[in-house]
Amino acid sequence: MRGLWEARRVFRLLVVRDLKVRYAGSALGWLWSVLDPLLMAAVYWFVFTVVLDQSLGLSPYIVFLLAALLPWTWFNGAVTDTARALRVDEKLVRSTNVHREVWVLRLVASKGIEYLCSLPVLALFAVLYQAELHWQVVLLPLAFVLQCTLLAGIGLLLAPLVVLVRDLERVVRIVLRLWFYVTPVIYGSVDIPEAYQAVFALNPLTGIFSLYRGTFFPGEVDWALVGISAVESLAVLLIGWAVFARLERTVLKEI
Image (tube, rainbow, N blue to C red):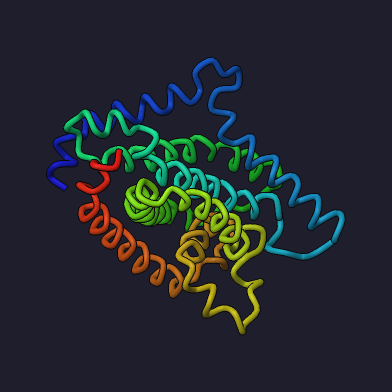
């Protein structure tokens, strides 16, 4: 941790570089970060409310959907990018003395900033559909910190493993597709059948997303699920950091 604090300036420069490179020459700029989840939300809203006429989640459904879909976009993008962080920047990782964890964690931060930039879109839909803002909005920072913790752990765990096992990158993409449907994004935690609630509770995103949705839907906040998510996120971080430290020298030889 002391080493990371000493590298904070490099960390900040890398985050800024990622954001600038990502939108360099783009006419829409940061809007690309919200265009994908916005189109997905439109499709799910049309399918479940117009075509199938199903009562998933809470009303207004578009706000309910976006409250979880935007952090999911952050999660999906951060896991995908951090998993290949060391391999993509292998020349810089090998030739510089920057703490190698920085190359992973800076992607969690840059994707997190993109998520924060997408919040005005959620606020706009909340105003248009007259979604009521509740005091649970103060829980947003807690949800943000928990998701950062979880993503840091997953990134530190996957980054060295993907260097050593190249096929793991494809496995990660498949797992993320499946993970989307076992996470309360297009449905709420209250929609989960009672027989499967214990299984879904093991998903750390279940409790985290309930905090996000608590801003407009306070009944979604389940503190038991939040507690489980906090413990699992911290455990994943510790495991990821230990694995990264253990495999760092081996990875440097491979790249």
